[in-house]
Amino acid sequence: MSPDRDVVRERYGTAARRALAGEGTGLLTGDGDAERLGAVHYTGEEIPAEVTATSLGCGNPLAVADLHPGETVLDLGSGGGLDVLLSARRVGPAGRAIGLDMTDDMLTLARRHADQAGVTNAEFVNGTIERIPLPDASVDVVISNCVIALSSDKPAVFAEIARVLRPGGRLGITDIVADHTLTDAERAARTGVVECLGGALTAGRYRALLRDAGFAGIDVRLTHEVGDKLHSAIIRATRPPLVIPMAADHAEQVLATYQAGLDTGHASFETTAPDWATWDAVHLPAHRLVALDAAGDVLGWTAVSAVSYRCVYAGVVEHSVYVRPTAHGQGVGYALLNALISSTEKAGIWTIQSGIFPENSASRALHRRAGFRELGTRERIGRHHGQWRDVVMIERRSAAAGIASD
Ligand SMILES: C[S@@+](CC[C@H](N)C(=O)[O-])C[C@H]1O[C@@H](n2cnc3c(N)ncnc32)[C@H](O)[C@@H]1O
Image 1 (cartoon, helix red, strand yellow):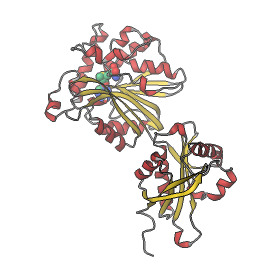
Image 2 (cartoon, protein in one colour; image 1 turned 180 degrees about the vertical axis):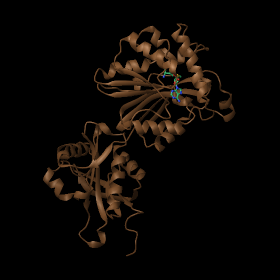
Image 3 (cartoon, protein in one colour; image 1 turned 135 degrees about the vertical axis):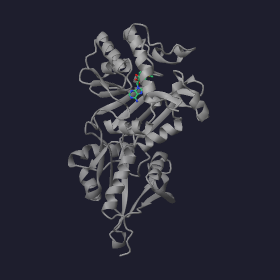
């Protein structure tokens, strides 16, 4: 069972008031706590001992989040502020580190720590992680350390993270995850410090809720045990990127992404990307889409060609989808395919088809997820670098377009 929010606030308020009085938080004093929780996860960081001493985390999200100068980082449930201060250093003067916490005395403690550490690009905000007081798409990275497990409304937390992250933004957190064998009765009995985490999600449920909130590239990895049937875990996910119609000034990056795909040897029989005039001539102008990162650079593209001049096939197209190699695993291909499906269905196109080399298991899985079916394998259908290769034929028949009988 997740503890009541007031109980959580009172617990951490008491801890903060003790720390402000120089008495330590009074938490993490159990047998073995110091080896599994708190400051033990931070080595090689120059941070005042008073700050590290108030760490109540279960890992080090900074080791997961891969922060860059200039980014805006939000720490959910920032406590004594250690992760915010470390983030502030990594994002530098052009970046911002924001700590969010619902406990006033924790915010006071964190602000004192920021002063002690001489950090000026950090700010601490009062609010709950279920209703984050920040605008839409205003944050590059969300971090958190051992907080989400405490929430009694985790779907709201993930929806709020998705809302405040910019498209293509990322989540890199540490949290407590429950073993799937933890029973309801055992959960209800967990009322101690670590045990107030009886409401922790299982790894499977964590993934499912992140997926429901629209995240891609979800990775939940257990790191170490923190209590009976409770594990610390690192969790990564990405908010899918912005997909917009392709413009002329994307051409160079579209062709570079195309070439990078061809260079893998698993994308197409082609070996060299064409020039723009050739590419432009064969792709229908109405359904050319690009996924962009925050800087406006192309992460991937998709487009379609007509398959036949015959009227009966007017609603059938062949598609291509290419993702920059550095952007694989971030939901770029899925976002592009969904946008392509929506764009083509609106235009009355009922079937999207293509062929994939059987060895390209990532593309086959992506297309299955987007509703394509595999029709069969054409054997030794063409030669690629002198080798005869098979092609798996795929198609997606729309349930929305091409339905009416007239
Ligand atoms: C286990 S401590 C972790 C603090 C910090 N992340 C660290 O690693 O030291 C949990 C913190 O999250 C805050 N918190 C818990 N539930 C919250 C909620 N629903 N909204 C905002 N803050 C919350 C508490 O006030 C507390 O400061």
